[in-house]
Image (cartoon, rainbow, N blue to C red; front, side, top):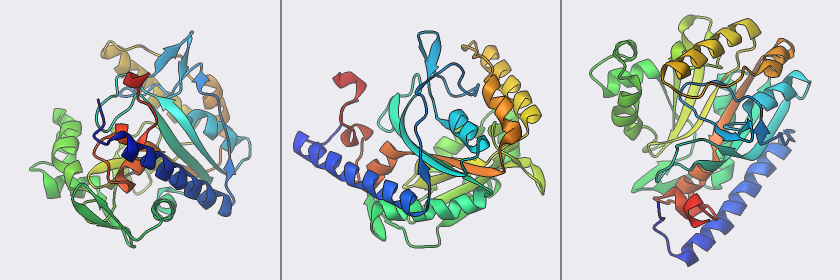
Length: 303
């Protein structure tokens, strides 16, 4: 999947990428977050039906540092962040890499609403400006950013409801084809309160347990981040993992060992919120690149 920029422009992009990473680290250090490192190679990834890990000598390359970072929360580290490499099998395209850079951060005694506000701060700090241009759209980064529920997004952009789409199996297709292209075109958009069945590790909303306290951030029609109030009930989490594992098996996919040490640690984990933000994609948007290849040093095909 070749990029569109000449070598000189790509070299400039790498310098700009480094400056963005520096601003991100400064943001978290100034807010008192601890930067952590966790292993890339793990015995058991979260058994999510739609995310496939790459095997590595009997273990797996991490699809996310989530499980290890939550164990650090349970061990008493209340504000942590990490910039790291992650791997997902079969993900490649102009906006996807099978090996990519993730920013994750976790905050104890917070929920997804608190994290929305902090995400606004972080992206504005990373951009270093009040507006950006991306694929012909001038995107205003000044506050407030747009917030829309999944239910309202379906009513606004499709001819069905989120509940009906889940029932007939068209939910993901409609999200990608009918809803996502409209999100974040003039200012960044948080789409939130996802159906409970689409949120394997998120806490359900107390006032409406049919949805989870989960949001995604879109800028210029591109998903940048996924976040939620954390589920900390080990019994419910095990049941959800077992359901995801059963779905993987039904699809003929590789099943993973149950992450027992993570489940054991959940009993000690405080209420918290966490977020995974794709840094290659964020850089792509901030630099107005058409292809993700243009903002990384090497792609797999170049090795």
